[in-house]
Each structure stands twice: as C-alpha cells, then as structure tokens.
Image (cartoon, rainbow, N blue to C red):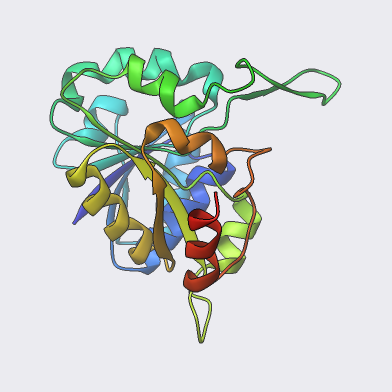
Length: 211
C-alpha cells in the first residue's frame, strides 16, 4: 500500500520512518523539497520525494497531513480536488509557538482540531485524527514495543477511514484504539487526557470506557 506524507518535520518524519519500517510505500512532500529528499534518501527504496503536494497524492491510498495547524488549511485548499474519496489522517495539534518559545492554544477551550479540520476538508474526504497523541520522540521509542504493543488512539466518524487508519497504526508498530468520533479528538491533543500515554490495549480500553 502507498501513503502520502505531507510535512517532513519532527512528527512527519517519525511517522514516515515507522510506516516504512512496517512495509508501507511512501510519497513524501514538504515545503522544503530538500527536507523531503533527505528523508526519502534516509528511508531508502520504500520512499520517494514527490515534486509537490499534488504529486505526492498520485497513486496514494491515504494521506497523512503532518503539518503545523497554522498552515494546514492553506495546504488543504491547495490539494482539495485530490482529496475526493481519500482517507486523510491528521496529527496536527492546535498550537503555535512565538519568538520567545511560548506555546499557546489556537482554538477556544472545548473545540478540537478535528472538528475544525472536518470543516476545512471537502465533503467527500474521509477524516481520521491520529498520530498526534504522542510527541515525535515518544512515538518512535514506543513503536514495536514487546511483548505487548503500545496503543495509539484515533478518532473518526467513518468506517472506511477507521479501517485505513487502523491499518496504518498497526503498520507503524502500535495497537489502534478508537476513542470515538471526531468530536472526541480533543482527548488526543496536547492537554487532553489521552496525550503522551504509553499504555497497553487493556488499560487503553479501560480509559476509554471510563470516560
């Protein structure tokens, strides 16, 4: 299977590495084409640097938009015509960092990035919020844990998006657990009760059931 990864910063690179390690073929794109080429060269034969965002989507079964929340809408607008019937996986947290390094939340309390992103996507796209519930370093260190895999939580409203994101999560070396629909995706974000947790399947389902 082939997945496009748009964005080769910390989390995008971590996702790409773990998907490739699990056997996924990747098409990489970045605002900095040199970054995409460097990551593709690091990964090897499983990855290719695309000429741009639209090119990355050609032949891809799904796309991961591993972008800062502040640029996410502009990229969605750019590639909207290519997202029809496509599974779109978004790990973005609604945060910004100023020149002094201060981190601030961009959305009102109680509103999740998933709810906002759903409104930006074309109606025929199939959204899943996933891969943003851990920092990049934690994501890579927790992948392929044994003897019991670590859980990666996700949220989606659709069955097809759920099936595809579960496949990607397993490919990356985790056990998928659904927290609910897109309206529950705030639990995965920085500050949410499920963010940066390393738990096994039984504990994860207990946390979901106890919500």
